[in-house]
Image 1 (tube, one colour):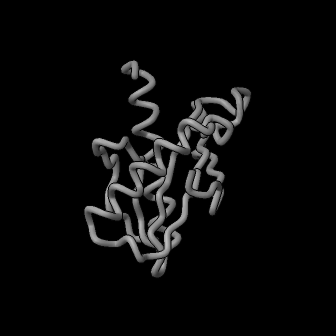
Image 2 (cartoon, helix red, strand yellow):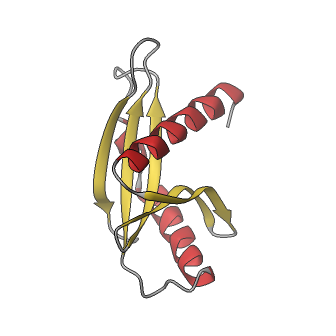
Length: 122
């Protein structure tokens, strides 16, 4: 990931984590990496483990961020989630996959759209 793209992604992930905390989620891990892949945010909502993919753009003119979570990305996130659940002995816990789409304009607050249960395990 290029430096500017990486910085934008990190800003979006930080905004998403703050947003989730305000909703009462407990952030467990940010930028989880394992042999199976990477997950932007792992959180807990009530008793449910939530695997969150964050997509960030500078402008709402760009393609919708949630569209970027294509089939290949869903499979990768699912594999990483299964790995995480096995490593933490949480295979029996309910879980879901969310997508948070963020537009970070040059001026003004971030625009955040949260897609709860955005996709099923691939």
